[in-house]
Length: 479
Ligand code: ADP
Image (cartoon, rainbow, N blue to C red; front, side, top):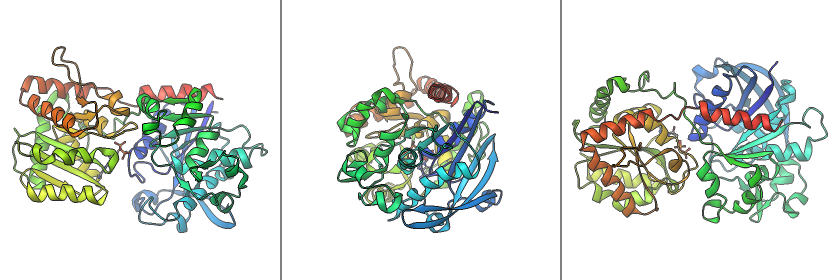
């Protein structure tokens, strides 16, 4: 019998379906927690169309039942899969989840209203009496509201605690007030009395902030930043009110998934012992992308969603100045049309210096982490950021803006003490970005300094071990 039973609810998870950092966390944190045999951790997510057939063909069907989504009565199948001591459940409904993408549909509010109630009902159906549900982001925001408003009198649910993680406060799941009766059978009173009302409508994320036992986010600095109006996205007041129950715990990365020594997606494996082999990845990537094949040129990598959050605006202001020098830029990302077009333009104008890969591609992302010398992440805000952690692991030296998790994980290089694992600048403007990147490029020419930097990047410890312990303590503290 396990002492601690947790259901981890998420809208994405690496190896099954992922669009960003949440997918990494939802895979790695439960896996790390499951190493403790006193913890029974199970993950639940939608059974998306994009889960590869060779993976989903190993799922086993568990049960099915019907879920009320307001006046609608929808089929819900439950599939199961076990791996690394973690049990994964998949919520099946073809009408909601058999679509090309994970999100971005006119009825996302309805899709995740269905998901949230299905997650709750599933517990009883599969007879898993969880002590804690740990939900993530707006997609899981209504679970604690439903539990509190509609399931409190059911003894199966009455003692469940709810932990909620904010991976990005920008995405809140805000809808018209009528979704309350229409999708959740919740009285409009909850809108009028202000409990679920937000910005003239209702917000799934606010619901979670109101009803969760504990609220988490993914770095200490971001936890402080979002308690202030500038990055608070209109939730800062509520977060300040709940500050006693609100903490930042920094993310790690899965050290077996991201390991230059064993990674089968990169051209040449390497570690600190044979670090000179890292540059073979650069040569091979240059060849593959049609860039001049040269080991002496600094390669700057970007793997990112191309949105306002990620600092593309300030890259755009100085991109062409930077490209007057002897450097290479390799970009992998998708996002806003104007940013995608900008990088395509750069590639068109500087074909010998820029490779713009406008797509989502896991294999190429690993190749870029392994090949690049510098990893650029000048975010306007960054809850934690995994790109810079993966870059460190592969010895690509991060250049970042000091915000959120970037501030907590990148120690700027100090030429006097030799400390540091990257470069950082403080204010969100293109001049500081330019200066900071210039500094990194200049140090790249100094072999001794650069080798030391690469070494301390690789030696930075961002595995999940430490942070998972903090989660464990937090879970135990609320039982
Ligand atoms: P966010 O979650 O805000 O998008 P993070 O840095 O926390 O940013 O996580 C991004 C994750 O998604 C990393 O694992 C990164 O490698 C991956 N990623 C981002 N863009 C792409 C892409 N175009 N192709 C492949 N992987 C990508």
